[in-house]
Length: 410
Image (tube, rainbow, N blue to C red):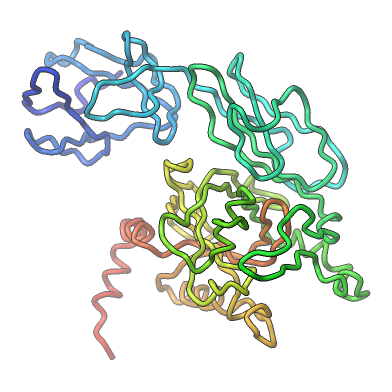
């Protein structure tokens, strides 16, 4: 409110019944007849916004004291009947629809993590009158699917809980997933409830009991499961292993083979990690072979599936926002690919060496991966060096990259 002339519209004619779109992008483009962009951005957490008359003091329209927190792919503004609220779907360049309330985010207590004793899980929202529905089979809850939450949920074993909040006339929450892992049970998992075959191959989900029972290696397994971070991917089982599942059809590519999912990063201790909606698809070339049960995957952050970006910084990196991440399996450096000695480290070693030499490479680290609560093995989670990654990196390291590009050949 202290600067009502922060950005001024150029002289512009809007025809009767017409619309004008202005992007709050901080790029400051104010030429009449061209795409208009303000010299400021808008906080997703909310801030003051006003349309001010040409005298620079008269407020024509505003959101006092601030507009509320915003959601990906959901608009906020003045709807039918001059009611202010959330607009879903958004209609840029057209008349706003009916504005509605918003179901506030869900809070899990306790949050995802590792457990050794039974407990009661509570899920809550600050929105009065909202219903919460949850599932434990990996499917997405809807207004009509899932168990209606009526009180704390008893948890006594490794469980994936997906929940969403709903209220008539309000924008529902995104589906939130939290994975509760009982490490002592992981060693005895059999994959009960999972398909016995997919992609024409029988599958064996259980840990190798000869290792579990080995007097030397068996006692090392539980400490090893918390020696590195954990990633939990939660997807509807049919979307993974069904007739049209991505694991059942690993060689097929493109948007038809993208599925809705959630990803959680769980640290044994220390940072809180994250739990966000995303999408998942198979990635890679030779690792797509149907006989490989440990496919590499790409995680895409897109408003159609949840958050538009993931705010996370890998240790040592300067890139703090991601549209894509990679979860790479050690196909050509692991036993599943026929390697006699499974080292797992070649790709990560190459990237770390590149970074240590001051060059550009993807940052990453090893994780234990779980699919719908079932242990899936050791993977590498890392930045995906795509055009988005390069654009953010170039903004932060223009001089170093310029020197590298200009270095003469030897």
